[in-house]
Length: 179
Image (cartoon, rainbow, N blue to C red; front, side, top):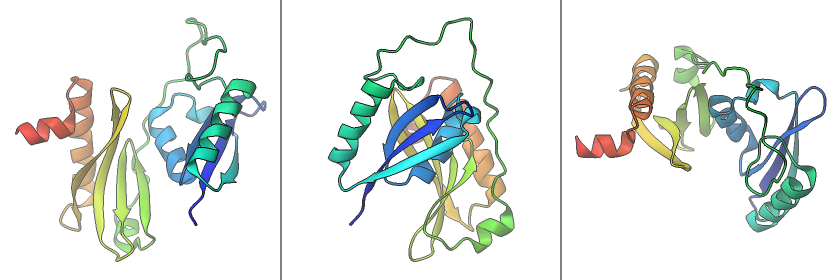
């Protein structure tokens, strides 16, 4: 039976930064690295497992309400970070995968390269490139091509192009459908 994880991110001082739920907290941590300005402050991650998504959602809501993490917005009435306090800039780290690592990847799941680019490996061993992004508070996934037809370098370039479309205010999936 698949369980849902409730995870908590703490900084080095023990301050609770964020509370969330996920089927795979490791994959979710990778997503936070790509899109959360506070990611570099994470020193500790604590994970609790729940038998159902509903149980995990209830625990998450209670944790946000009572523990008041700094960066959860929904359900947290803690004061916002003052405007004069700026989070450290998040440098979107890329190049976490190597060409050899991609060629030899066999573990099913998502393998993060950084900045929204993932290598998806199926249980049957097929590989494809996925670009994950968020637009209008909605998480989206866009296929960029199969491996080895699309190389790591090509996938990085395609992901770069999709990030450029996002910066221009366009949805990459809608843009591709309209082309």
